[in-house]
Length: 82
Image (tube, rainbow, N blue to C red; front, side, top):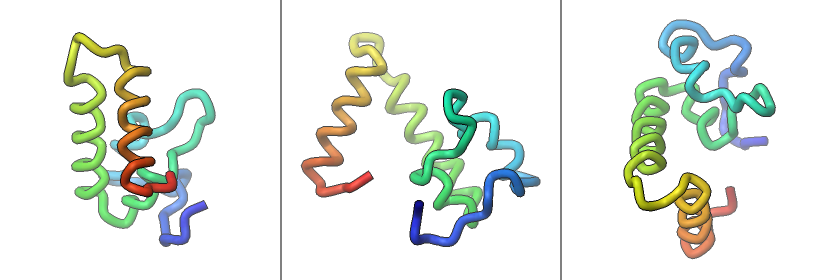
């Protein structure tokens, strides 16, 4: 649970409602906290999502799982705890 105020994703409408299908985790049916914290700033969420999608689809030489592992190592090195 985030300590940052968020709009519950079952209450998203407008720009947030349009992004919901792109950010909801299909396995768990929820929005990850790292994206949910942007719910008060839909433009920020769109920018974060665009960066993530670009990074995860940016190369044909690495599988998605390998890109995710690289992101994990970078987060650990930067002391990010999410």
